[in-house]
Length: 107
Image (cartoon, rainbow, N blue to C red; front, side):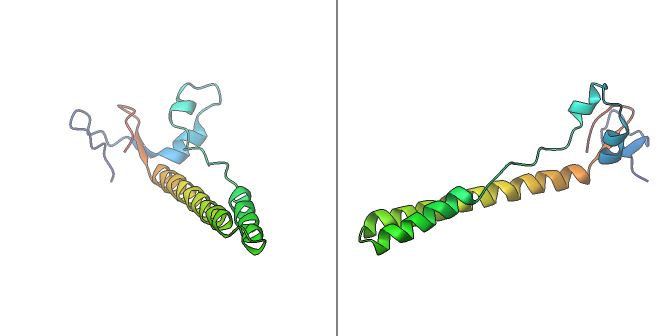
């Protein structure tokens, strides 16, 4: 049995956070408080376009500028990828969280 880990509470009245959040009415002020982390709106198109343009510039003779574009595009793609991974980790943590119905704390 899961109990609230707070030393002041220790209530056994605990619910899964995602289930509790879904059961709240839309007008509840707790709906925003317990909402899941937002999924990032990401696109790899800018990184891919920078890489393609960089390759075209390299083949056209502008080696330094082309390599800079390729490295910049790859770096941007890595940053976007890390942001997605971080957001998915936050969402996974939210999905496995619990809420104490007595003290309203989450854990």
